Length: 205
Image 1 (cartoon, helix red, strand yellow):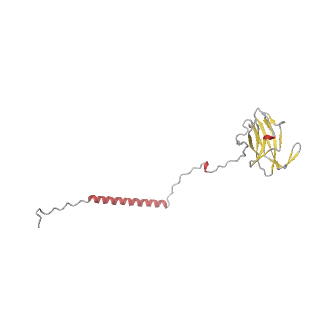
Image 2 (cartoon, helix red, strand yellow):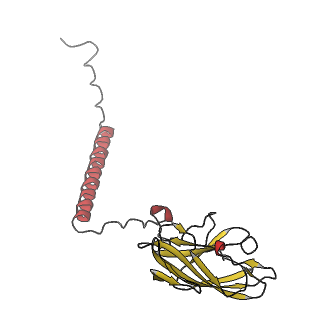
Image 3 (cartoon, one colour):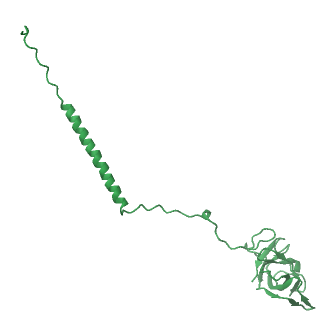
């Protein structure tokens, strides 16, 4: 039977243009991602198969990275540094190389060692001040390379007394009776006027 109102009209076809465009863009984006990943892999492989590695930044070494070797000085009794201009403007003191022996000829007698050997040096001291400084045997002392100290056994001075007037120079022959294995390293000088009562050491030889 026919409809009295005529045949119903068909709905208009839906347009799918937007869907096609979205699918196309998605495919293009996927292709771009695949190409980028593939290109990155080729670059990475080429770096690992012979490319130059980055050079690390240089490091700077400081003194705290390890000990710094320094000369060892024989310490003085009061802890002063023996290299700090001993004497200054007051006096100048020079020490000869040491001599050793088992006997010691003095002007009065022949001394024989009691500890193993005698160690002796010649000390020249010049008084640059206008004051009198001391030159008695008690003003001097020997030190070995281990820091051990030894008093004098015998001393002889070119001055007539145990003092050196200002502006004059004198030589002292100083000897200590020490063990056979003692290695002389320095000799010290102490005087209330010349050193202010501080013990100052001078290397031997």
